Amino acid sequence: MTHSVEISGATLTKHYTSWSRDEPTREWTALTLLSRRAPGLTPIPLALSTGDNPWITMTLVPGRPLQPPHTQTTAVGDALETLWSTPYDGLQPIELQALVDRTRSGLTALGDTTGVIGQAARTWLDNEPTDLTVVRDPVVAHGDPNLTNYLWDGTRVRIVDFEDAGLGDRAVELANLVEHLSWRQTDPSPLERRFEVDPQRFHQARILWAGFWLTLIGPGGPSAHRNPPGTAAAQARRILRLAAG
Image 1: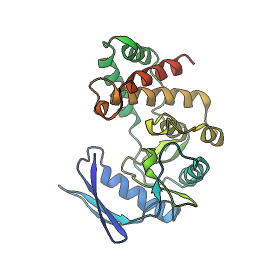
Image 2 (image 1 turned 90 degrees about the horizontal axis):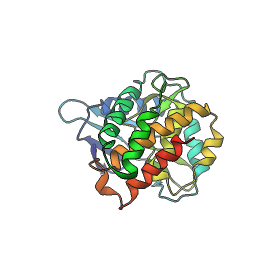
Image 3 (image 1 turned 60 degrees about the vertical axis):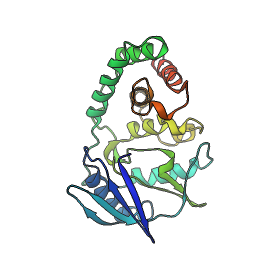
Image 4 (image 1 turned 30 degrees about the horizontal axis):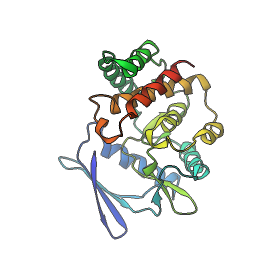
């Protein structure tokens, strides 16, 4: 976890426990922009403290986190359309090169693994996505499409947790959602059809995110212990299918 949460009345304070990517500033900047340009979509930021123990206080937003499988794909799409239609001025760029480098490093280590995981790691390295670090279709990027960050109030979906937010690329963001582990029990294809992105770039971005997930849940990964047996092997097979075209 990168933060803890304290709720008091109608406000929530997020206390950061790590902030190597300048998460407090990223979240504050994104929420400030979105509360002004897309009111109602996100919490309203109220106070920011930086330094040794950074925190942000914001309003609570109504709704319950989506759980897989869910049927609110259209409402998620509406929220994303609002997000991606918002001017992105003042946002820090998403560090896509750092993501590529981190994924390559993790899969290089897994390349010596036997079985399907090692095969997938080597296949990814042989087909490393290229040209994704240059933003082609700029949008406000949320950066963390975990289902729990989409709150459903019975009418609409709102979005929370913007510590990874910044200026990003629409195809890369859509691929991030499609490949997120939390979406495996929900069909994201309506979102793929709704948002027109370059198909080749989208496919490359899916391979990137699929590889990133294998570094998290594969042997020795920081999230390996959180998933049932067989999850990493299934992810490896997913990479092989994507690489095959």
